[in-house]
Image (cartoon, rainbow over all chains, first blue to last red; front, side):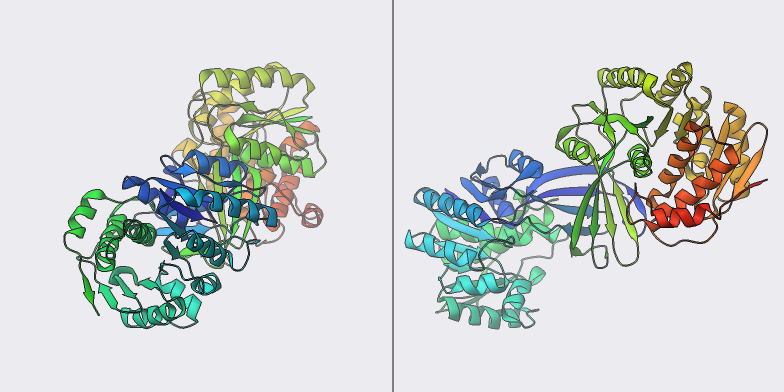
Length: 305
Length: 305
């Protein structure tokens, strides 16, 4: 089983409209609701690939109930909170996807401790841990650092996908792979990280702090990876059009699956770029197009940098 | 007590964002939730004016529960349905309000009959009936006509604010006042109704069908009214900037309160334009700014046309 941690889950609502025009009223043509948030999207991609996956995080109120009802094959190990689970609205029109992300509800120290207890008791059954996304108000400033430390004490590999101070604090606890996207790496380092060259320098610096592998994704330019020994780069085999919202989550899902299976890093990196592309083609975050995945993973290669 | 009918209520969610940019992700700065939908907005304005008001309509699921929890002083006489109450999202940025209206859940014949029974049993305690907004799928094509007929048989005055075929069917049952806005009048008559002159002709035609008063509002140009005997026009005393979303609902609230009190039509029409302006100044639909209302009603006058 892979343990996925989603501290700030969201009930994702997708609206299809004709054309989104600011200042106007729109008839919503179709409504779709799903369990979202980065860690939850990672869990759903893993489940779609046939992996056993348990989801930890916070859920509360009527939206929390709807979130839980939408988990499908993902095992529910969520911690109940008094606050209401946030909603995220994606407005899809003929051109674009426009996203409105509510802030998450605050969690209390007691709720955080309950999650930590659930996490600790779930570790013995897990092959690997993935932690992804933002942290709600009320959680400790080093929430991810604490979770990585507990998992590492249990001998479990960890993949961490977040940014900012939470990423920096967690690097000191040596996650197996830290996988920020270039925006998150920029937010953590306080400088622009816009292309593969800047991403490689960022990964180098972050890897220096953790002593582990750091993967920085750069949107349609693919990813760079740095370990204390080597540097890699993976360029997507072809340009894909679609919804990039869940691409980073699929990339993270591939990383944690590869780490759990003990596969070699270059192979895992190529797989991650293929799965990420397969998410761009799928209509919503948390899903991948399996035919595209098969096609891309036959083509994707990690090149030593 | 005034009976307000809202067949297609919505849980209104208001998001404040910096600037809404199609194709981008936005952090929502604040979230506000309220009981919305035309009939519900009318009921809330009446309650704010100190009127006793009962709300009839359909509510279901967890959003229905949140809708009910947000009713405040409005008495809850909603009919429970199996479907989930729709949501309406208003995105407020520094320039505009952008609205996304979900379609309503379908109602079953049994649910419609339950509403009709509640309506019939509530009439003896009512001074007037207001029916406002769209009709959900599954309700009869002549839903409003049936409700107006039952109310009229009980001797109660009715104010109807809707458009399209539902309006046309209901006119045959002679509502005391039909009050479509110019878009709804246009939708009912199948021709442009964009200015006071076109609105006056539309009101004339609709009044010919009902034999009662017809009020057509024309946004910031005010309103026109036609009875079998007379024609009136009210121009807003001054131009107001703000959120026009709930202006029509406040106008309808003033009409039903005036009709319930048996006041003279020109006085009621002037009051309606004043209250409508007070809604433009208030931040959300279903509320009016009482100071603006006091100022405007001292100035607004209905002129015979």
